[in-house]
Image 1: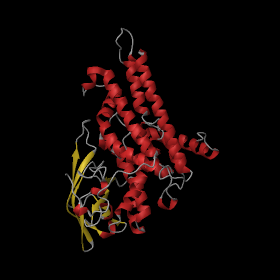
Image 2 (image 1 turned 90 degrees about the vertical axis):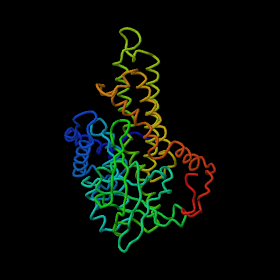
Image 3 (image 1 turned 60 degrees about the vertical axis):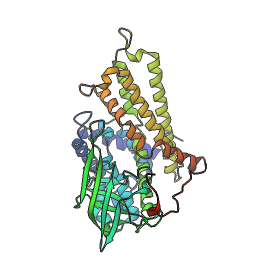
Image 4 (image 1 turned 180 degrees about the vertical axis):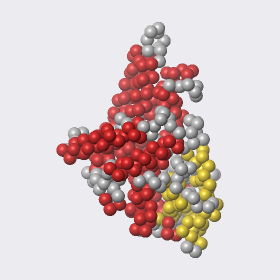
Length: 414
C-alpha cells in the first residue's frame, strides 16, 4: 500500500478541505447527542449541500447526478470530513438510500423508476429503510416468511420485519418477500421498492437500552405494491439482495475509513485525564496500567485503519476483496465494545447514572449499551467467522440440510 497522495489526489484533497472549511460548520448539532429529528434535518441538508458541490455520489456516473469519480476520492473526502461534528452524527437515514438503494436502482431498474426515485434519493429528499430481517430471519435472511401474492397488476404483502433502522422516518423502503414457498429458500424471494405511506404499513419503534428508538418493527396487512415497483425478476430477489449487501459493505468501509473508533478513543483518553485516581492528586491517566490499556486500543484501531486501507486499495485497483471487510467488521465492533466496557469500569458507580454525565462518559455509556447491536448488525461474530473460514481459508462449509429442500417443507424452531 502507498499512503501518499498522487498529485491528482492531493489536488482533490485541497479542494475538499477548502470546501469543508467554508461549509461544514453550518451543520453543527446543538448538542453531543441531538434528537433524531435534528440529526435527520442536519443530514438531509448536508447531503444536499454535498451533492450541489459535487461531493456526493462519488462513483456514480454523472448522468445519474453523481461525480463520476473514484472510490479513493470518496475515502479522501471522508478523511477530510472526519474532524467536523457532522461526520460523527449517526447517518443510517441517509446512507441506506444513497449507499444501498441508489446502486440497486442503477443495476436492476428501468429508466422510469430511476427518473422517479434516483435523484430525490441522492439529494436525501427521500429517506429509505431496508426491510430485510424478520424475527426468524436475521443472519439467515433467506429464511424470510413475509409473503407477496400476485393480484392482477399488484402484489399483496402480509408479514413482519424487525430491526429496521430509520423506518419511522422513511419515505421508501427496500423490501424482500417470499413469493414461492415450494422452491428452496434462496430461489423463492422477490425484491420490491415500497412507498412507506401505502395503506396497511405499520411502523412500531423499538426502544433501546440507550433510551433512543433507532430501530423498528414493521407490519404489513394486505399492503398493495404495483408490479412496476418490483425490482428484478420474480423469484430472483436473491441476486438483488447480493447487490444491496455488497454496496452496504463498501459504504461502511469508506464511511469508517478515517474514523474507526477514533472519537470513542478520544473520549476515553479525556475521561482518563479528568477522572481522579486512587492516589491523591493523581488522575487515572497517570496510572501505567490504564495508559497501557489505552495504548493497546490505539494500536488496535491503527491496525484496523491499515486493514481498511488495504481493502480500499484492492477495490480501487479493480480487484475483488476476500474477507478483509468481514475481518475488519468483527475486530472493530469487538474493540469498540471492549473500549466502552473499560470506560464504564474506570468510571465506577458514576457509570450507572443516566443524568448529569459529562459528554465523554455519556458517549461511552451509549457505546456500551449499543455494543451488542454493533456485533449483531451485518452478521454476528459466528457468521463472520464462517465467511472467513470458507471464503479465505478454504475450509469445508457447515453442513446444510436445507439446501435443496423447498421452503414449505423445512422445519423451523425444532
